[in-house]
Length: 249
Length: 123
Image 1 (cartoon, each protein chain N blue to C red):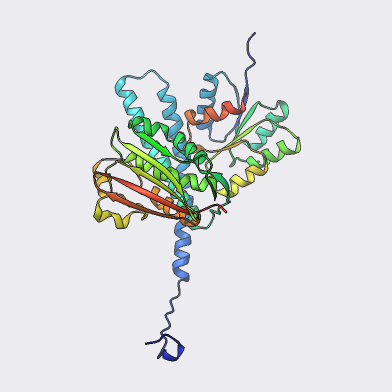
Image 2 (spheres, each protein chain N blue to C red):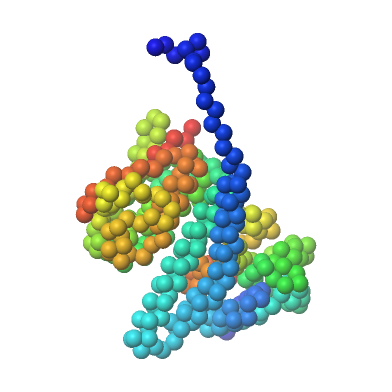
């Protein structure tokens, strides 16, 4: 049958009032924003108090206790930061400010920022990127995406493993692969990756701390920046996240 | 000859946090003053401009922006690091307009993160 108005027998109009849903979303986002700010004040005091304690003469057991508390406070700070980032994205407060950015410099900055995590797990970072590739994007937001992907790669790759970052370009796109030789994402969990607070079942098994917000942020930000994020993964072999981005004009 | 101590002014209304930061900076050889509100910060700045100001934004009487406005009006050039738990873009952008040197989120940082940033502006 040919398509065209003459073949239309009837129309179906679907109408739903989403005002209440919008109001509820706005209230929820505002609550997260306010609650996060309120949590930050006591957390700041906890972190400084722990830093102060760490400088004191402590027994081995006391030091371990303080370090555990400090690690937990770091995790809490990260979670609050992630919740606020999501809240800012959802309220439309995040507006990209594009500029021409050198990708290699940007990746180098991000990898330096997470050098401690890399060293802690004795991981090899294999970076393959030409020196002169420019990308037109918001530097801070793009770094946030890269950071979240790199943190995950470091977190879910066992000691001695390898994390790779490779950048390629063709006429239309710039492609960044962030790969690891880590635990991989179980097949049944793959559909849920990127959902808020979702963590793969084997991540919980490995007792790796995480909020399940990092990838959600990465997906949300990359959409905002006009790129796409996808992945392939095989359990116990590793995962590759691929960022595809229109080339700088 | 003994090197002159750098003077750091902390404008922070949280007494515990102010004292904690003071303790750490004093142990690093800084001379530290604390202002509990924006009005006191302005008064201390007028008495002797510090080598560096650590400035909270939500302060009683006169807020952090009032202090920044005063610095601007008096054409003072000492570096300012804003230490606030407000992390939104609006506040960050507003601080940029006052030529703030760095903006750190208090709960995301402790001494280990703050000190390298301070060193950069205390040279």
